[in-house]
Image 1 (cartoon, rainbow, N blue to C red):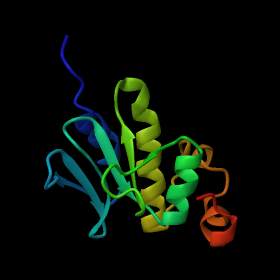
Image 2 (cartoon, rainbow, N blue to C red):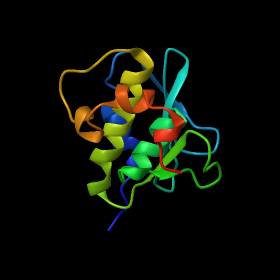
Image 3 (spheres, one colour):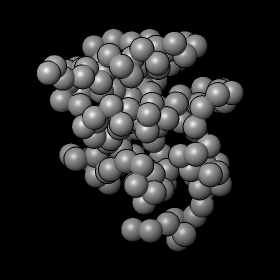
Image 4 (cartoon, one colour):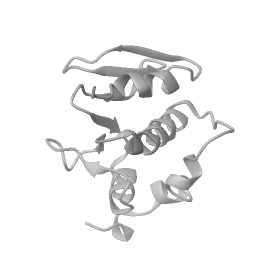
Length: 132
């Protein structure tokens, strides 16, 4: 049985969003950009990495939707392990959250609001309200 190319699966969805450019990632895999800014990337080994504000990273990790990045755990980078096809919808939803955050374009269909109920309010919380 063959392995799933998660980068190709995610590229098939994310690549359809307006303005998204797909290119090889410098550490292997595929990278997604919009307006010259990276939305995130998927490594060949099945890990998706996305850069978000640190406060949002804390909320996503606390909600169990992502992990802190393995080499930059205190930055805004988050990682999502793609072990099976069941992990892909969450990864796509996080790419979409980042796409909407970077473009200001809220897409009509999909589960972005299910990731976190109110991203704007969560991102605006003070540092005192956040877990360590």
